[in-house]
Image (cartoon, rainbow, N blue to C red; front, side, top):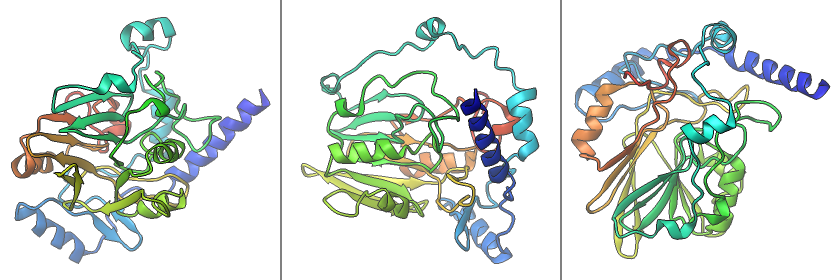
Length: 319
């Protein structure tokens, strides 16, 4: 009982510090705002606003309303959110969201594009013979500690050691439900040649975790609208970092120090888009299709329905 109370106290203190940090992106200079609007008007992809050491969503993201405050967190957690439609009983979960165990041999296919959902934002994709994964998370809780924090409803359908050989991975942002340090390390250990594609500001985090420091693994950082080339067996692929309406934070004092993004992988015949977490910045979505599409497959999270807490930073089922 004491451990549980202590864990709740730690979580409350953490949330209090985190949510007390200013939540809007209005601190950018007039020069930066004007420049961003001009970029958007000429049809280019939006660029993030850079405020010293932090990033911000640009003014062209018209429905970005900043992040909710501590009172909104309280309402979301304890007052106004209806969770009666979210099953918690394992027997019901087994019916509603069954988990089918899979193994590496299941990924051999004649198709030049196939994907397997491994839970939350983790998708394993084979596109024209190249294997990559999005936001790999295997942790039981999306948290800085295993004691408290959001707990996953369903276990992953396979263990990291059972994944097929991975050529590269993309990471959308640094929130704990999208960036699992232990999973990143294990995947790199099992795939020494793997390439990691991350948004600006995240390369140093990867290096601190021992990724890309020595050996043949590498980390490529990109900003919105930038791309890198990946080559395998003579085939070339474009990996695009794309705008997303969101934010980033892992600790009490690093809010928005690392950029957030979506990703597109373009092959000779097939195209895949992964949005990461994002609000509904529909003008950017249109640009993705106009400039890089049409896409054959898209992975877009739409599970964060609560409008109090998620309206600006996620897409719900009505967006």
